[in-house]
Image 1 (cartoon, rainbow, N blue to C red):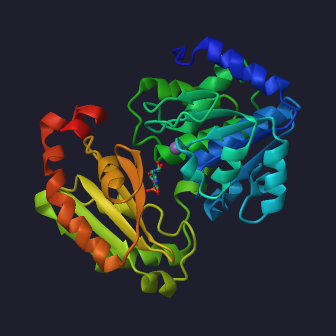
Image 2 (image 1 turned 60 degrees about the vertical axis):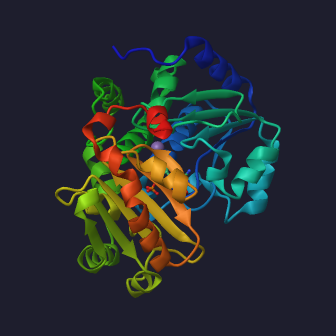
Length: 355
Ligand code: 5GP
Ligand code: MN
């Protein structure tokens, strides 16, 4: 039996909101990943099976690797269909927000969310959710928003209504956020959730292959180039820094998603506790960080890169040149050395922040 983590009263309230709403919008963060699409589409298929009128709106286009997800062709992309999205947001009486904790994570679409008079429900697993929703399901200890969504569906008594498409999407979210059950995967309960999804007939091996282990040749060569030419190790700080300049991106005809996983690869170098990846985009330097041993990369992203995220997977942005950003990373490393100490590994986020 999966332990109950979601309050029954809140689950019942959400179910009533779904039942009484004629126009439901489900939405997620900008640059949607497998979990953003998994949690939104997982709910979308359930609502379709229940004959509810629901639409998924994303702030921008989902990446190519996720084209296999059932229902992705029905997604309305705000950057492509602005007027239509505005109408949907205006008509909505319920907006379900998945896999983000702050309205700003929706970038331009966030303005419509903020203006909307619809009831709002947040379903998420990031630290420190903003109190913008009427009902918030926030579980930072969970692997993914898709896991939260599964538990919520079960708590609403709707597991039997969940079809294979819904289960496939939720499973994709869990698989991508946990890198095929290899990070954030130590809670035994996660495997009970997986079991219930698999019972619906999910083809997990196909999901793993398509969502995690299929890349364009350009993407593989771009990442190889970065590992060969643009990787700098800072042994003293147990850090790895890797970057891609605008010129590198151009040379390998960069497309969205092509640098996915590079930050993890840099973090796999023996002796590295955290890795930072910098990508020179047209408007800013995109910063992406990963760590092990509870090293809080979200503190780095919050303090220096106008961002945040999870303790061991966070991101942000830098406005300035790539070289300046590389220098800044090097300069701030000593400040975070104390977090490498074993005594800080178990510390809570608040305790670390106060140090
Ligand atoms: P990624 O490195 O894959 O882009 O992002 C990893 C995690 O960091 C995301 O799940 C998200 O929680 C967080 N993140 C990434 N970029 C940003 C950002 O610009 N701002 C904030 N607040 N969080 C971010
Ligand atoms: Mn997520």
